[in-house]
Image (cartoon, rainbow, N blue to C red; front, side):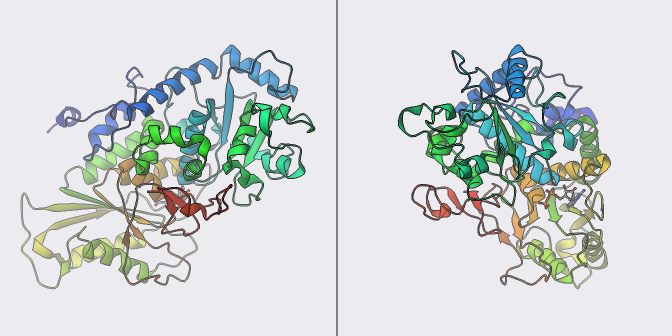
Length: 493
Ligand code: GDP
């Protein structure tokens, strides 16, 4: 089989059931139409409604995005400091915007960007993402004939927007500068009688130190208030999507978009995140060298922190999990005859900041035979030792490794890690989850790992209560439950 056969071999659907459109240049982004050929599992089909709403969003991004007259006008309005709906304009602005701030590790950034995209789609806004975090060199443009990168000339440095920003939504709600519109206000913050004129934008602060007033974002009447702002700037590093399902405002639309609630990130991720050519080179070279030949590919994501000592306890969990769950053959004390050509062979892809776990697993399958003489080849693309922020080569490797994990047939992940969430979501697979490797490394329960209940990522900093009934947010709507790896978090199932 030559390299060209590879792309024609499988009857793969390069557009993922209509999720993607034809017409992008192939050379500028090879991964976009090639990636389907690398997946054995074709993934879930998007609903027709989702496909039609994606096309509508793409048209909106072109109509309102950077370089258009609408964008210039909106930027002028923002610079004026005056709220567009409050200004005595004859009609509400045609284009509204959501700017998404990118920060923290790559997994976090991907989950946040997917969440921001869905929020923009639900609220009829144009999404613009923060270009500061290597976004342009890691990803291809997701929308045809426009850009999703916030261009230079934006009046604020995004990093400077934080908890003390006067336009912070929670702060304006706390001080009374913004109040729910009450009955006949039509959603415009300007119409809330007796309140001062709202500013040109609202900054939504959903970082770990968010206050109860910031959490009002997940309440229906606050969504009405927010709809009156032409510009919203969102800071989150979380997968806030389960929170949208708590809102009546979006429920009907979300039901139509995602009849399979556990495939939301699966669709959004495959739609938005295409590795840029350089990253795709890392993915495909590694794939052909280490994974392509295997009958069975197993991905193991070992999330450890630079300061943690190597943990024999965690290693034991990894080997027990993969062998007891039947993902990899057991090692035996007898000498097995290697099963020769055509033998069932497994490729194990380990990703981690450290090399120790890989060396141990590789050594184990060398020093002892695998049951049935099966051939097990273990590899690890990199061991970066430390987390770096904004270092291009490091970010490239992280993104390539997340993507490679998503190309395996079975996935073992470390609980709580957004790196693993993205891999499982892109793959559309429920992982086997190792408990988060807390500093003391002790077991939570007897089993080495548990099967994840959903493909969906967990929303770590979820609102604890439903706004109206004040009931536990994990018990208010079907399909939104507390996560197994983060009990206060919320997950779609
Ligand atoms: P989380 O902290 O586990 O939720 O995942 P994030 O992706 O948000 O942040 C961890 C960051 O550490 C990654 O983005 C990488 O920069 C780095 N990192 C952690 N584990 C790995 C790994 O296995 N491989 C590589 N290349 N980088 C890693």
